[in-house]
Amino acid sequence: MLPYNIHHTAIAVSDLDRTLEYYATNFKIRPISIETIDDQGVREAMIALGGSHIQLLEPLHPDTPVGRFLAKHGEGLHHIAFAVTDIDTAVAHLREQGVSLIDEVPRRGGGGHRIAFVHPRDHNGTLIELVEVHDG
Amino acid sequence: MLPYNIHHTAIAVSDLDRTLEYYATNFKIRPISIETIDDQGVREAMIALGGSHIQLLEPLHPDTPVGRFLAKHGEGLHHIAFAVTDIDTAVAHLREQGVSLIDEVPRRGGGGHRIAFVHPRDHNGTLIELVEVHDG
Image 1 (cartoon, one colour):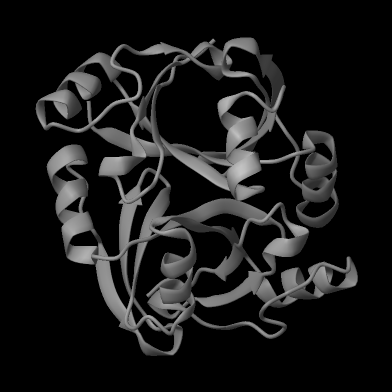
Image 2 (image 1 turned 45 degrees about the vertical axis):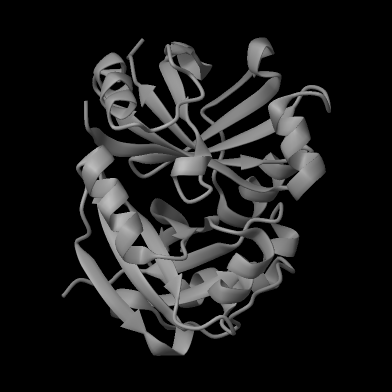
């Protein structure tokens, strides 16, 4: 249940295509996937880098979590995601420890992985996502 | 000169020891190093996780870059660092591309690595650090 990797670091952006162009031009790094996740209200690109990823998040509408983040903070770092082998056990452990969870029950995220968000208030203002990675 | 890994994701915190306790209790992850870097005005902990790291930054005084960040934004994600093999070439390439750099000339950072910061204004409000990792 313990985190074994930083699965991704996520950045909220207002224009995904322009941002991907920036990364391609300046760092020669390109996305391995781009997908629209309606129930999170985002278009999301994953850039693999070493054993981790940069995730770029563009809101589909202003009235979404990432849209509200942009309105409040502007573009910038949004959350960090830890890979865990067993997300149900991880969530149960955090709940036992009294850590506030945004998702008490894991749900499907990008790539079909099961995810759960931990509330930033217990965690130095940092939004943390747990990801149970599945292959294929 | 291209980035080959996310070396670390950095989080600004007001109380490093309390934060380390949080990580140890809830995620069973512990720092591999804690050091004070006077010229950056921080006490910094590195937690290895998979092939990357979480870097926790506590300001030594309010009148430091991280101290001012905390005063303005509160605790939270501070920057992301890309590992590069040759930081001089990477910096020269970015300068050629017209990307604004905070450090035109690389300097020594934590762990004795050579580092340079890229200005967030060209980069979706995200502060990016380049790190040329040296072993030993």
